[in-house]
Length: 76
Image (cartoon, rainbow, N blue to C red; front, side, top):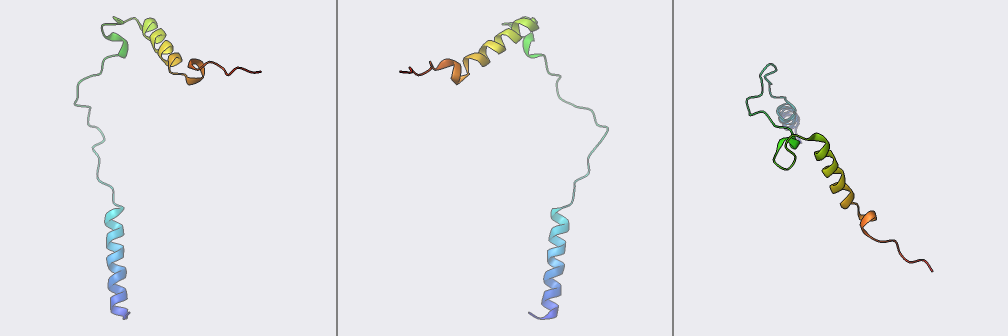
């Protein structure tokens, strides 16, 4: 490879790396423009009762536990 081609290849590689590694500018002080989220327990089944929502969530997690769902094997 000639020195001119090697220099051109190195220049092209450096240009691609600098383009690929650049960071886009960000707007730091901009506020969120979307709608505000409601709490998950504010809907109909719980009517704002956080303890009722927590209990339902804990029960759902217990029912998804495979070790609790499957009976232990019979030991002989």
